[in-house]
Image (cartoon, rainbow over all chains, first blue to last red; front, side, top):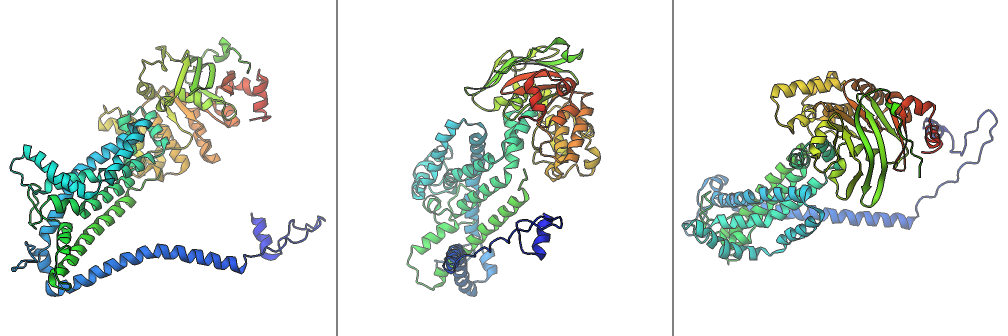
Length: 328
Length: 268
């Protein structure tokens, strides 16, 4: 290696160094031709196209954030941030208008919590089963069915919550109102199970076999291997699955709009009706509020809040992912 | 067909027998990878298995802790492996592979520490049994790390990740992990093939030291290694045990032409 650098530094490249002992010198290697002009432009054009495609996603995101920020700014000129965060009522369309986002945040958080209480355990257990226990054939059948759950339109889930799950729950909880966050949350939970289980399963299956073998070789059972070696080793991928599940849960609109009721209501009790941020946005954007009115601008402020919530959790997930990224 | 020599009774030269492989065949699906292997493993000695790639030496090794049970389509056939003194066939359908693995542990080709701390890596074998007090675990982990000549290097970072150790240290960590449960046999599957010469030397020293306490079966590609560390050597060729004898005899005066050709580097 050192010979080559030495040679390259002070002499033209030859096939063989000439030695004082009389080994004759070979002619220098032919000069290599660089790419032609056309080829060089082609490369640049390809690179530029690829760059633009990648940049467009950033531009679109920034554009959305910009518009959200701009319209929200107009909103916050009339309603102080303090009122927005502390008022306990959200009635922007009433004569006695209140602009407290907390009832919507509470509704969103409650529905998401119910959904995650169902989806995370069931999704994780399903993933462990599919990755560590299921024979090949069972996995080949179960996985597509699970993924089919994501293909069901969310409006169908919404009516399913309202017309099937709520009546069912009322058998057990007679006082349950017709619109409630519990059934909406449970149905959203079912909806996001495949996201959680599919990504978690991928992460667990990516754990190299030699780690499992090491565990079995120490006399561990399959369950011990799954829970003490495979699951911790896959934790960063599993955390990513959870974050995606969470984002889906708080961003879900149709189910809550249909089944959870539309009245903003500051409560964390899932047995009550309430509106979520998304439900409010869909309600207002379908209405006939004049463009530029304060009522119209509330949906941007609400949208910004939702985006910030998701962002915080995505950042949290990112930190978790880095923290638990395992070397194996 | 390779000429299979019968193992003469004096090969083990008076050493006690720890395990007896009897007429063992093994199939991956329909492919017969081991053909009628018969071999005795001497207690508290090092037995090496050598042979060209694909000869079945690792397959034979992995029969000893029933690693093959983890994958579908594998099948053992023949007389099995009898573990002494009880004389139980550890490949028997009535024997729980987990119990076999609790008594016969393994060190793999590539160091494969768990994504856990140094301490937890070693303690794993105790934790999965789950019947020890904390103080006992601490003591046995320390003993195992000392046994693997790693204690002095890691005693100040028992709670940092095992993966942060150097390659050689990781392999000794895996040896400590295998030692902690006080196994009767340790299987080494080419334990130094990914290590540099210095780390290799340390592992070889360790193997020589360990044999005062435990029976060792080692698969190696490196014939010098087999010559250095083992007391007995089996030469395998295309699924058969072509020759089995004292290491000294195999490397100085092999009876089988194939063995001679292999150890003199004519093929393999």
